[in-house]
Image 1 (cartoon, rainbow, N blue to C red):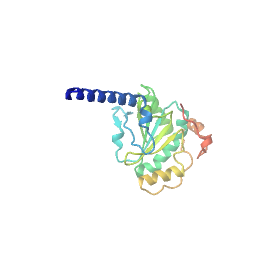
Image 2: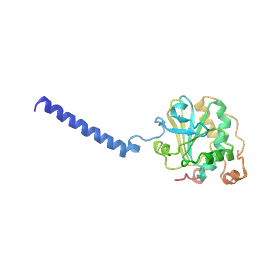
Image 3: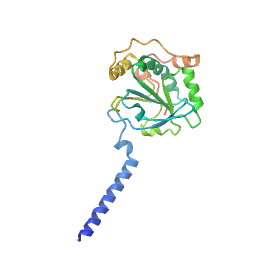
Image 4: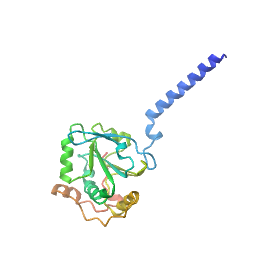
Amino acid sequence: MTVRQQWAVVGAVVLVLATALFIATRTLGDELFPVSVGTAAPDFTAKTLDASARTKTIADYKGEVVVLNIWATWCGPCRVEMPSIQALHQALGPKGLKIVAVSVDDPGSEQAIRDFAKEYGLTFEILHDASGRIRSIYQTTGVPETFVIGRDGIIRRKVIAAENWNSPDNRRQLAQLLGVPVPPAPDAGLVPSDSARAEAAPVPAVPPPASRAPSTR
């Protein structure tokens, strides 16, 4: 076999391997590169809800402790946990915690998302991913799902289904990540409207695993 033929064989082998790798990453992406605790938070794009509709990515939160919540206005369990997220924001937002809630509502739902935020008195950052692509990027199985991301960009916690984010345990864990004192014990329920109160009232302040609201699949 000549040198030229040897290089042709090598080239063919490399091409076959590259093709196999491409197919594997496309079909087995979740298994090969799982988004889980201890892995880097993947990039995403979502738009703000103001008139300018600016695009934001994970890079906008570099060096921050982030609670990334993936949700939708039509999701019942999302309504259950939103008051506790707002309470957490009020407690630790001034200490540097960034809460970013990315809605996966359909295109054209911007006003519905704004109305939802107004109804629940939400003052943390809310973005809109009309494509819903963040769900595949973060390999979610439903909504809500939430990821706690450290300053180093590594996922420290992943929560599937509704959670009481204002619980003493959650406040303590997030305060530790921020490197700040644990805030005082939370006040009971932050529900700004009668309709929101009706949604949240049946859920105990710190729901046990068996009674926790399931995520919407």
